[in-house]
Amino acid sequence: MAGSGLEELLGIVYSPDIVVAIMNGNAVLRAVRGHLLLQGALVVKLLQTILDRDQLLDDIHKCITDVDAHTVVSSDSSVLDDDALKEIEAALVNMKTKLSAESQTAKLWTRYIDYVQLLKLFLLAERTSNWCQRRLLQMKSRRASCQWSK
Image (tube, rainbow, N blue to C red; front, side, top):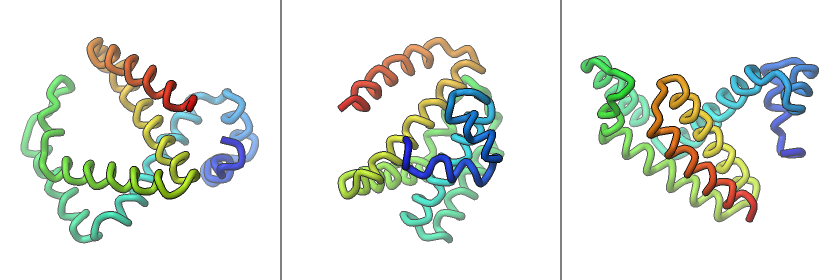
């Protein structure tokens, strides 16, 4: 991702020496944290362009109240079946597809978002020892690596 601006973005959070270590494959924990921060910022920016700010805040507030109303355990994914979350996810996928078709740079960053999301799922599977989710992640990562090589 040389020349993509990733180093400059990570340089906002970390010192230049740490950014060099991150890009060389060292400082793994800081790299993961930096990638999670950057992916979160990119998704928020996309959501701000997709949804009206008031609508977004209302949907997020509704999701939070739904989660607060239920006892959530790691094996229960019924919280993710919320209609507001599904609408937001569909709008996000449509926007990423549209942007990817328009620009190679946008395609790079939407793939970056997807790969960091894959990292999040992997970390969740590792922390919860969810073997079914690990197997699904292996299949997704193989498919993603085939798409990346194109």
